[in-house]
Image (cartoon, rainbow over all chains, first blue to last red; front, side, top):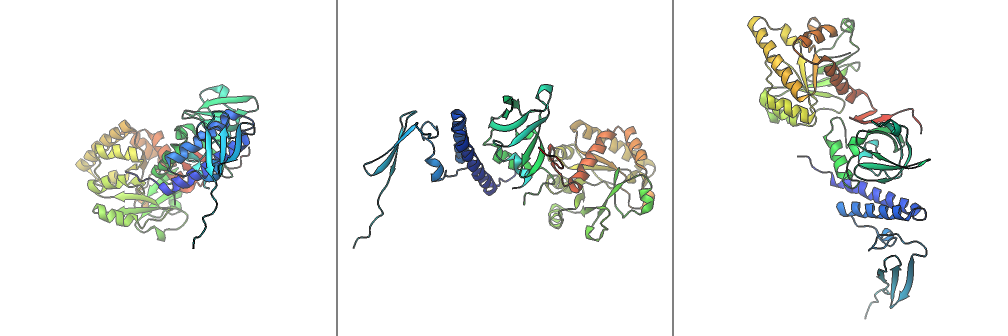
Length: 106
Length: 99
Length: 203
């Protein structure tokens, strides 16, 4: 039985995710559906090889419907000490808390 | 990046040309891959989108600064499966040094 | 035109019409650079085989000699390229099938026919016909060579091919297998079946 090269797999998976998100950035104004397809592929790769999507990629698309955020298709509000991103395709709200740095008590 | 890893790497965004195909109309299709499924590549050419099956075709592809000739049967997996299966295929093939 | 031999050929050997030789020797580092180096492994058991395989360098072609047990474990190893022929080699159905799956070539050489006489040669012919039949059934990689250990055992390519054609071998296919085997070590543009680098080509 051959052993899998998991490290190599993960390295390639990371690169592929990077390429896919770069392509998505380019594509999202031309072909919206295709951009979603790229997000879907990148997420599938990440899930299969158990990688975390980096935070900078996570905030590029809606978690629920996987459509990337494009001008006019999402709303950002700051409310109740969190950033609230609403996807206007599906109405899903994503809340990112902004907590002030924890202060040291005496 | 070594040229062997085309089998495991992303094809979306690569320049591709169909070299051999049982269907004579497909020979010479050239463009950029925009989408990929288990059995097909979708190529964006000057004349619009073309869907080409992977099995039984030979592709010429530009990868890692080199021009490669790849048989479609080697990449006929789901795009996310190809990382695992492509590397295993390279490991199984004789004369390929992964390290 | 390629031939696999067990000695360093001189200019007389090249006159027979071969362009390239693969020389198998037990310590290939002493061989001259003009020939392709082959590492001949003579092993008694599986352990010795693995021990010797570890010493093989990257540009050496690896061939194995041993009894049936050794051959069976050799077929499984990734580094082994071919199973060499020698008088008294046994190959069975299972091994040939494994050789097909694992892409290990089987050498069938003419030298053992030259070294034997009478009834023994007759039996060799019988065995070889059987082997070729199994090889043909599975379409396993096989090479037809002279396997000579000195100049006087060498034969021209045409003679070798015709001899094995009588025994039922598919000669053209053997030639293709041989080229593929050698290409793996000589052509830097060859990666694996169906994956090649095309040089001097621009998009």
